[in-house]
Length: 186
Image (tube, rainbow, N blue to C red; front, top):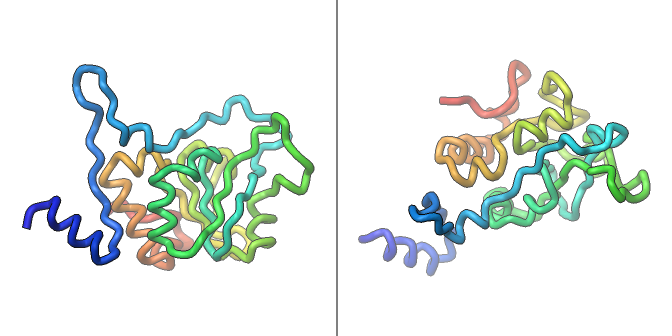
């Protein structure tokens, strides 16, 4: 059975099929798949008084997904992550401090965990991890285990990062050890 037929068969059965997205074609043309990859914003311009505070979007569930920007949570790859988790987990992202709303809109990670009864936090991207923790990453915050992962853009393009995310989603207890955070490299 060729790849296209296998994919059509699985889709007809109701299975979501992940396909490898190729790199940009030669000659300067960019494929549409590259525009589906999430944008990961640098945090250099963020206000100091908002450092470490996040905006939590809608959603329910025991897993909080923290990405670098609100636009990342709306990407096609982010939707794939949500489908893999099941349900409608909430997304969160760092606040910019520019045009910020009332103080109740922006929470610390610990306050968001307590308010939403979160038991697992997946943090996407090194910049986001530095933004939240400014140093060592604690294995547990409040009642939730914390797992740092590669950024959504990197995961969407690199097989090794996808495998690490998949291992994390398959067995969350194995990946939240007190001795270290995140999925193992093996």
